[in-house]
Image (tube, rainbow, N blue to C red; front, side):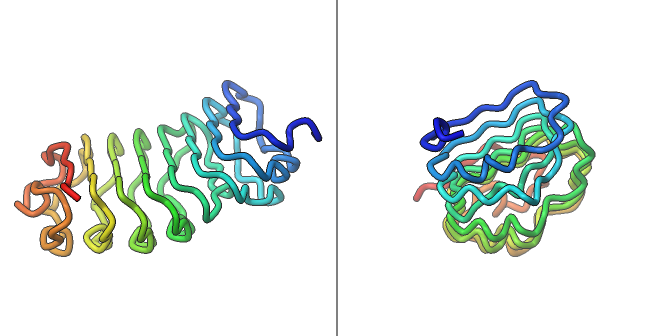
Length: 191
């Protein structure tokens, strides 16, 4: 373990039998980037301490490991899940340094937490291929740092864009035109 203390990048991949991350992971105080891929049995590990230096966390086709999130996280990507993820935890709103959030291929995700409105540093939000997601929370319109907002193939979005999003001058033109979210173009907002 002592030889790993200075580790800055960690990738855990294709460990289908891995149920929990080891407790010593919390001792990696310099770890800045972690990718967890194709670890379908992985469950939250409450005994693992938050990784204070972690800036990037990518969870790809794996169980939720959001308990590793720390206030220093700037990039969080949740790309597919082998579990039936119906909602993301409210604790996402505690990631005050988060600048980029990608949520893709969570077919059973049916809601986003209102705590997204607390992500005051968020500059880029991408949501795609979440077939059960029925609405985008109004709080997205309050994200003043948001510069890139991408919505891709959200089949269950049947309502018009909520008015707080339509009226937000810093959001993509498609949102201000009150078009259905499923038809929003990939948009970039000039900063």
